[in-house]
Image 1 (cartoon, rainbow, N blue to C red):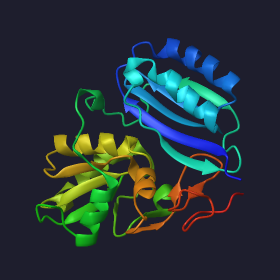
Image 2: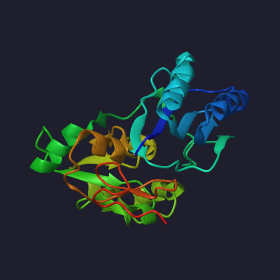
Image 3: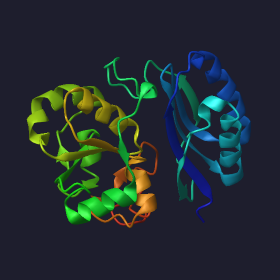
Length: 251
């Protein structure tokens, strides 16, 4: 029975009190029998949590009582077992490391495209203005190897800090196209889209909610394989389960 609720979410919002929040959030999560990881940084929050549905939803409600987190929109999936071993709350320099300090999503996002719209564009091969559409995978190469959008651009990066130099090497390939950057849940492709705009790529969108939201809101068309996740489930299929198409068995 799939009665463990798994959520992932992130939000770029200034958190100068990240160190103090670490202790507060840990003290709230542990008694609720939640497990997973919450990353905090001056630039925002990135979380992956799992537990009984009532506890998970209750924690999100408590979190949103802080107005800075009111816009969090968790992506959900279900599992039969707890995919995390402990509850960790960490303070980092960045909630997703890019080593590019001028990229500040809290100061303004790049345009986004929702999952149903991207599916429609991929079906047509063009966006609503008639430009050819390409998808750009901003994940690490080993993640891409488990599954990606059909004919997605893959620069074989080993870590996200490799993305800026890879962009400068391959930027000419993107000219005249509508580029949709994507990743697991949206956090990497958000920073990537902002950087591409700063580097002069004209027509750039980020996939809102990443692959997980695409699976949640569409039938998974134009995507092959599964989506790697950083917990014991390893790879989720298009139906957001470990047994679905493209998923990998637990080991």
